[in-house]
Length: 247
Image (cartoon, rainbow, N blue to C red; front, side):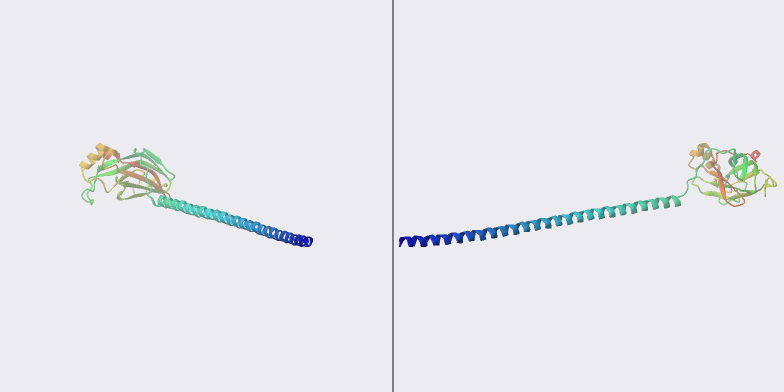
């Protein structure tokens, strides 16, 4: 009997041992499967994170590029607007005349040549008729003129650059070597507007170009038969009185 019990116990122990071995194998397989799934899951998470990071980097790069592009367009537009403004300003801005402080003794253009030029002031012969009355007016005398058919124009301006007096335009004929109405190549041009009293002229004469009244200026221009004017000279009118011998 004892041997039978012993044999029975041994069989039970073997069965129990086999059962434990099977459970260990199942547990090992389950753990291996779980580890495998966990590894796959971790790998998928890593891939997902990497994909998201890539998308973020691409989005950041695109945003930076877009920002730079917009900034570049705005800067180019600003430069274009400034350039347009400067061009428009220069186009419509009044051209500043370059005025010489000295009266030229002679001038030579493409049409006419002038010699013996003098400039100053003299008493107005039309004092009573002038409105407003001008007691002393600027005058230019030209001793000799020669050249081609064309026109000569003299313009007087005050210290503010405003034209004073009536237009002074003279036609020159090369055939007769003379101005059409003057019947000669000598010319005297007198303004119809000037200073209204001798006190003002005395102030102009003493201070000359530093005077609060002056300086006045004279512009001499020429034109051919095409009617296109060109400036020969612009100069200050000195505070000198011209006598009748200067005619």
